[in-house]
Length: 363
Image (cartoon, rainbow, N blue to C red; front, side, top):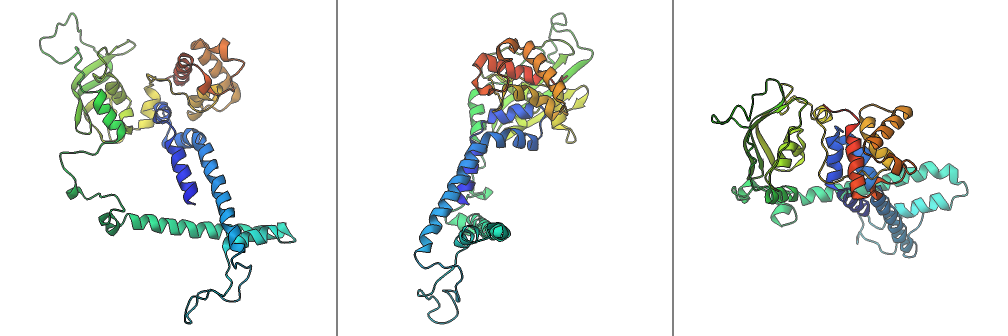
């Protein structure tokens, strides 16, 4: 069981964060992202751990057959009579019991229920034992002894805020606050910055922090409907951070904090009753780096329509073809749609991802 747990944790951790974010940006829920993207990507590692665990279990049971294990022992090696532990007695083992019943019985089919029941009992015992060990490691006594993680706020420096590696990285690359020219300054020139009567996005006094780092400071601007708005500035000035605030992708960053309002079609996207998944379906996002899913080219493009309710094969075929034609990739990949998208070049991979994210018609 520990081998399976560790292998599963390592397999899940090996799935790039940007792949998860690509799924969330298309409006997928956590369950859909986990089931359709994360688990398939981590499956090789999980299966490897399962095979190694089975081999280890079989290898550890085999020596027990030599040192005194039997199918049925008349008395246990441990009892209430002095000296309590009797080394001369034979003993039983659930692992050997599974082997004996499953492979040495003349009627294997008839003993399958007993094999499954014994295996379930063994897994249950191991799971309970591992859970108790984990809980013991998290107890206050274990924390004092250094076995657990110290979480008492009194033992931490209030001026030091814990930050994840992602948050630390963000704090290093975004040291400046984005100050757009379109602001509420009283001295702005109306000829250069005309008023927008019906903005589709309105940002009001937005402030954003990565931990203790103030990345965006007092941002106020309006985005006109059916117009192209560009944020231009040096690397690390906060352009991507502001864009990720508009569809709440920054919610996925540890220690992120936001103040102010962002109104989309008049609705506050940071309202506590706002549906984040629905918001991301309406506000699409194409990432700076290509992030194809560990699926075929076809399934990469069809992923967005699938999670939004399109399941008919004919509709998906039409969507995939239109998407790839729009990305100028159809002629190149039409004969290998079921090959892995990870084999595409960087430019083609980005074009394919862009096409996939545009096929569910975000606002």
